[in-house]
Image 1 (tube, rainbow, N blue to C red):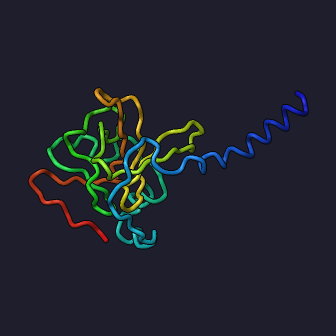
Image 2: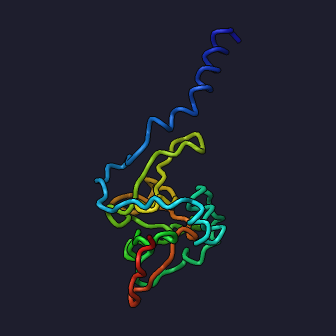
Image 3: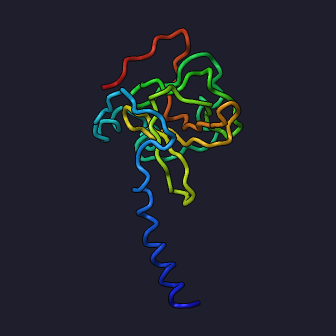
Length: 172
């Protein structure tokens, strides 16, 4: 191997961690949300959430497939952020993707923020609750028509409110 090739490889490897900084913000083209973000310290969220929900929402962990009871939830209602209770998905847009995670064809407009995620080297679109910043999951381009999107969500990052129940007050 030539010395030039080794040096070029080292330069590229050194620059890889800097790539995500070039892709901050909304990457799918959604409009800016009118929802005011919360600036609650992570220590306060840790007190309000189970340890698993906290890890997923604020440390961007991923639950095991089929570990959430929301995978097979098929009643009419609303899926809300488990941290701040902002409505994120309507049950009319939930479908069975056979992945082991709750999947939706689209979120409630203005309630999700996206960014590119390079944790698995290949870029993926990660999405968060626009209000509390809690990590929800990733969106993929292998969903059903007409949009072709699969919003693959961690079940522990959501709560479900059935259609007959009032939505809870947003956490502040």
